[in-house]
Image (cartoon, rainbow, N blue to C red; front, side):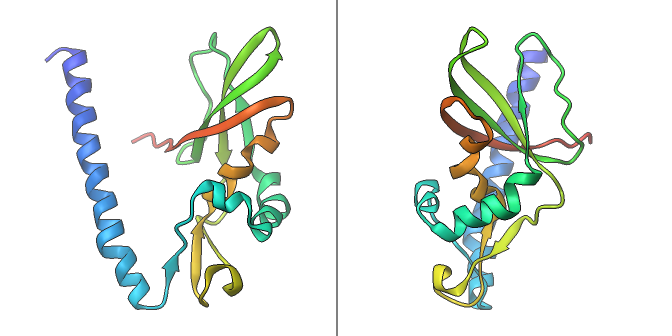
Length: 161
């Protein structure tokens, strides 16, 4: 196979594996945890933006450790830490340095927990967790002053293996 065919096959296999992971997570793991009294809050980004506790938590606990990295199309190599959790961001700038749009990466360091225990009055029961990076997405625009809009695109992890 040539490189294009190989990449296509790898992409197809990766999509199948990821679909299987989400099926196990949503159909097996989450229900089993809920049977034990542990629930994961499944709210949309827009809903999270309107929860005052989430905004306060983001600004008091999360924002200080996030690292926004603007991407320059002239630089081909991006220095992301190994095994770091990141998300790609699409920004619409107001003519920032002569450009109308930009792309960026936001690194979430390992010091952040992957899940956050929500207060019972928000989650509706004593043990409700929420994925930490979902706290970031509604407020990530605060990291990029002067941008008209900022949309988190996708999460990714850098793993050298």
